[in-house]
Image (cartoon, rainbow, N blue to C red; front, side, top):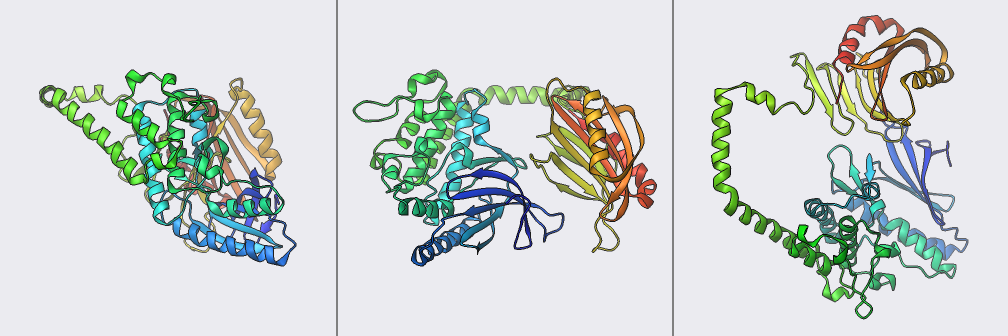
Length: 473
């Protein structure tokens, strides 16, 4: 599949996951400007019987309708296309840039009560919409929740189309399977009878895993009730009894003892907040008013105090002809001309963070003047000199008719850096580039100015101002 283009449009560039009956790929949509990324899921039921193939097609169409409706929620990937080729079924969905929650749980750090409550509210609000569409997700787990880079919100992925047809294919081969992941699956779902609160069970287990740092399969259970025993794994003094009771009810072994809807859980969590706010207001309201009054007076009397509270990160001087782009995830801040376009990318696979470009006069032409920022992970032992040698070698190998015009040490955001200017051919154009990179916190920060050779000098001053304005904090 790698390198192939489906329907003359979706170019497969990387495999993300592979199962017995399904594969997931990262692809580029060649029909859209700048070829944005998308996710292609290939379902391979391998049916030869026409009746079974028709059954699979019917299930696929049913699930597609559900996915299309679910994609109206901002925290669920949109369905972009679906089709069938050579008895395989394909789904094309929106690509979500971010990290899966399983990465957050691998840190070994136990989450705080506030973090868990925020997590529960975020996921349960998504599930409330899902359940309103009469859909049970059936596979809530860390790998199916993505922390979106752009706003830090959770996005729920991997709904039923793949699961339904995979289960059908397995059952027809004599392998009776339940849809879901065993570690997060309640007993009724394991027996093939999932309920809406089966999803609530999985969310509760995730929260307990975050609090304890223990994988669900490793948590002990009561020998008689089969209830999960997890309270001894956390410091009870730092967790409200109300939250502990909520989680216990969410993961009750018998689905009849659990919350019956996400709304009930969300209301219980809201009660915790109300109780906390009441206690806070009662104990601290008057002192806070007094302190606020003192600080307000001090700030008015001594403007220099303001500076004491504004030293956490560098700021840019304001230029009325420029706007500021900032990405806290990558700890960067840069000024760019108001007349230029900006496109946040945040691609963890390629390292592309953001692109700025000057729109061509002819809107049908590809932009030939742009500034790009990339951030790549590097090994602890990598030196600037070593990274430079590798990068220059890649430049000479990757670009056509490349000529290195200049290469010297410099500064980027006040850090030691290296600059390379080179020219070559790209898509029939003679292109000239200036790339500057530095290493910081096991990452390589690269900013590149690219222009058609005849336009390079014309926009060089603007590009240099952008490069000089870059702050890495």
